[in-house]
Length: 208
Image (tube, rainbow, N blue to C red):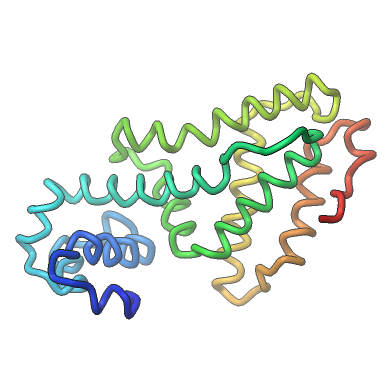
């Protein structure tokens, strides 16, 4: 349900309550399985109030998608300080992904469910593509350094995103605990999947 902080929100915080309600409902039942009045009811506002903030249901889901995709990009793609080997860079990016997924599991499930949807607008698609573009730069640099095999960047995106989303899903279902140890084990598996023979010799990440 909506957090206590949201329940006690001031009347002018209706937009935030609508986004919270939409996240919960869209994550549970998907975009097509949720009616606008249900979102309004969960947010404790009149149905017509939604249209003061969002012209259509599509506008609402795009605003929600951008909110969480931009938060994800900010957390995962923040500039790295100092010089790092491809293996170290991979570990930093993965731990950022895993940390975001553990902190915001509902948002991760929502993003995973909706990232391919036809109703996403151009701005939402740009937010989605930022991670893919960053992966392309990382793969190119890793290949040049001889640490990463020749792979299409989209394969690496699918591998890493699928791993983090899958861990969130299995944790939600009670299959496993998505804790730091699980994240570390997955990191080693992912690196060995993309590392060249030379890069794989540095398979274990350095202790922090």
